[in-house]
Image (cartoon, rainbow, N blue to C red):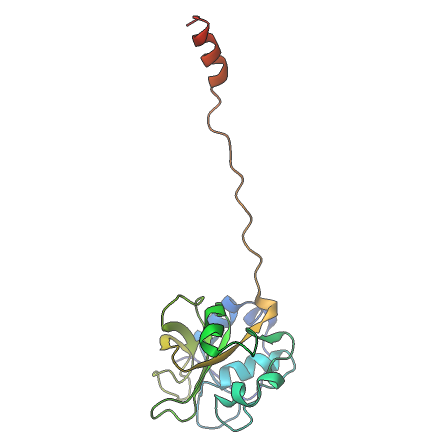
Length: 194
């Protein structure tokens, strides 16, 4: 059983300053900030938004409302909407990066939709590995997040934490091979000196 976080609680900065730190925290903690219905998917981003003095709002009590009804309210710095609203969701999904908070529409018996964090960049398929709660592992006390492939067919939109943007790795410096003076050798060879 993982450690349980109940209610809105300020975390240490090193627990959420990068996606990898947030991921590690979520995989070792159950989160229930609103004391409603156990460890729900919405609780994870709600706790993260709280760290920045913000509220992650649904507008209707369901996860999909975080995008459908409250996307502008939830897109307050450091969080931004991924892609332009004029793009269809199926085009915006191609912009998903690891660490983005992704929102899904209701589907089948799931009337609430879902919200999770992309654990990989968009990979060109219809599934995406996501970090989240209430993804089949149960919602009980002490049940942490897991990583599970989710279908992108119900993708609505995504939020990006701009403080998690990582600079590209530096370009490697190419070293010259060997130290043999091939030009001098070739010149001597042409002059008949071997």
